Length: 319
Ligand code: UDP
Ligand code: MG
Image (tube, rainbow, N blue to C red):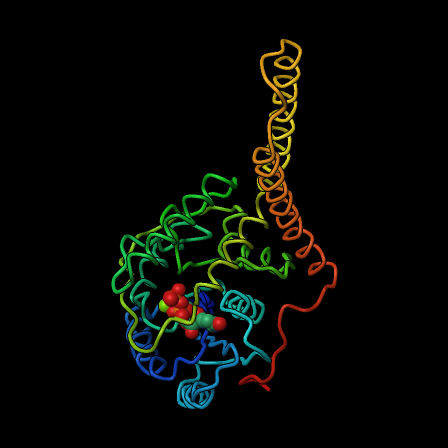
């Protein structure tokens, strides 16, 4: 009798948030693989939140048909292509689950990772990173650039980023609530998550080759993300400017003293045109570079001061 009245423990809900940009070939496979993972973990209530980053292919129709046949699937469509980090932020803003897992739509990150991430979550971790052990199907240039970026981030900022970089992570409800209070526009999602703190752990996995289609992260976008990440979490470039300026001035003073002494001793005449040109060019170049670095910070300050919303929702499965 009492056992009937006793309330059954509430299922923990887990949202899988997936940024999607022109992934018409991948969504069906992704849904299939995720469904298999969900049936192997019946102790959780799963949701899939697809965030369409303004795709131009058949992605919206496929998302709608998945949502029509599976009540666990919901979707949002952003009003413009805003980049996957902003798309993930939109997903996190619209998620009311106990924990969320962010993963890409191209099956580079195997959906089976969900079980290992959940095991760490149950053991008490609040952020669980899936760190790339190795990467299949990517050029040596992509791998080298990514490793260089992660190394520099580790050196130049005080963030505890996963050393080989991560593309998938789990965040619990406290972390999601904290993230919603971080309003920055120049968003580097992974850096912000690492900055938040909480109990962070990691597991490792092998990043697969893309299931179908091409990467949407162009070199230009990657460079912009790298600059956002450095400028967002390090003042080192500005400090570096002061040090370079100081060293250049010191060098100039030493050079002037040297010439003065040589002249007084009558050893040599003033130095010629070539050395003046070299000095002007080097110092001019350095000044431009330094103005550029200041500009990066100034531009981002302006972006934040405008307080434009990060994204707008064009349509969603709930509207
Ligand atoms: N993506 C997005 N908006 C973009 C570019 C990419 O939402 O402007 C999504 C994309 O559909 C995928 C994920 O972000 O689900 C990772 O992108 P991609 O696989 O192209 O990047 P890579 O794995 O090459 O870094
Ligand atoms: Mg990918």
